[in-house]
Length: 269
Image (cartoon, rainbow, N blue to C red; front, side):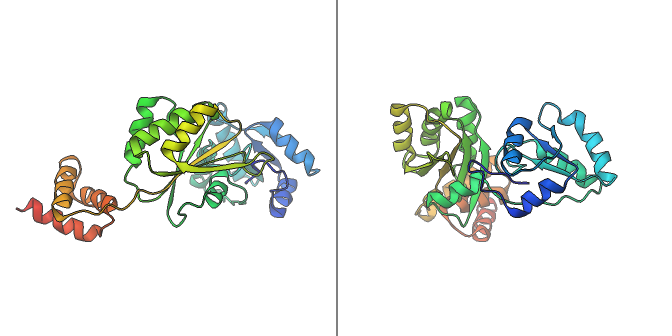
């Protein structure tokens, strides 16, 4: 069940009805959850469910659910299962034949996308980047050719370094938006290129609050037939033929079927 990401009024009537009706609410942090419930006059039983106790609690929770108990899973802010441990409980509940009912609502990822002005017809949520430069660059390299807006969560203390690594890996001129404190008093949505925003946060220091980083899709490259063939041959050394064709098609904005046929021709001489 989704909870507000800042503004306590960003909760649905259905969510309030559900929270008041369940037997127990499972929360990442019961102190945070209690503030939300108190604000809306809900006096429900709360218990903690998070990474540290999830494995221990899940068998008992599944048993209770199978016996007819009504349990609600909430995150500290936003939609559960988006970069939090709730998916394991949902997975095991479904395997046990328990009905899982989503109660949608606020999401920092979607709020950031809507406010960013970047392409929203295709987007990919990538969660948190690795905290260290080497793994972070490798993760970014895997996403370089993805023809979609990329969405990350990041902490203020790592923002400048992350933007610098993304700029170096994805390209300094890629469009970028940093959205922070969404729905809160000091909400800010800052646009620029990766290079510009990396420089801004290096100069101005780490920002406060929850942060969503959004990066526009790569520009479609214009290429000669020889360039495409060279890219196909290179990709085919690393990947199976179909995967190689798909990768090159994404980079150049071409038909995957046509690229696969061309890969067959190159392979067969």
